[in-house]
Length: 96
Image 1 (cartoon, rainbow, N blue to C red):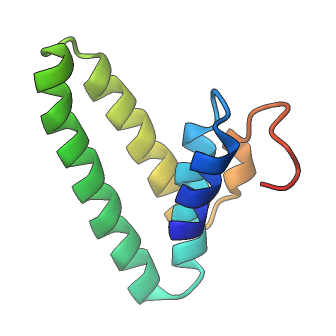
Image 2 (tube, one colour; image 1 turned 90 degrees about the vertical axis):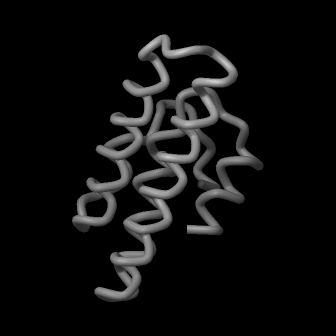
């Protein structure tokens, strides 16, 4: 998961967020049941913390919740073993 997060920060590519969510969870799940469990715990904690802090930044616009649901869908996609490239945006360098 750390590699996907680091790559996401390095790429700084608009529209790639869901791809990196799926890829991080996919990579963790490939390490076995413990990896899938850890990915779920980390993903859930991160999304819950983000939803909490978004309320202070933006109020309860609802957009934060919608984005969080989309992130969680990408997380689950990757954890279930499905190809994270489903979320890969056009033009993202092959390096990622």
